[in-house]
Image 1: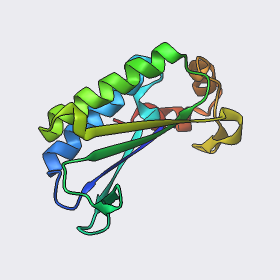
Image 2: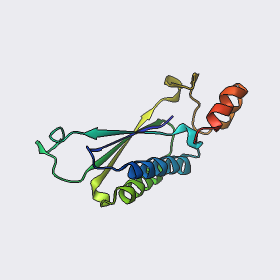
Image 3: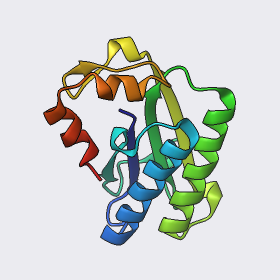
Image 4: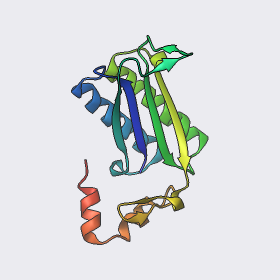
Length: 145
C-alpha cells in the first residue's frame, strides 16, 4: 500500500482541505500506477510552530511536504505523472502556490512488505493478488473507499 504522509504547520489544513488532498493523492496514485484505490493511504501530521527549520532558520513560508512510500517497479513516466498530479492536487486543495508543495517518493521492494496479512504483489499483479484472497478479505478491500 502506498503510504503518503502530508506534513504542514499546525492548523494550516482544514478538515475539508485534508479530505480533498487525500482524495487527490489517492486518485493520482491510482491513475498513474493502475493500482486499485484501496491500496493508497494518506496520513496527516501537523508540525508545531518552532519545530520546522529551513536553512537553519525557523520556517516562515507556506510549505507542505508529501512523503510517499510506493512499491518499487514503477516507470520514470509513471512517477513523473504521479509527482505532477500530487503537486496539483495539494496546491489546489491547500490554496497555495506549487512552489510551496514539496513531494518525495521512495521505492519499497514489494516482497519486503506485508499488508492485509499478505506479501504485496509486484506492480501489475494486483488483480491476481486480490483474486487469491479469501472472499471475506477481498470483500473487505473492495469495500474501502
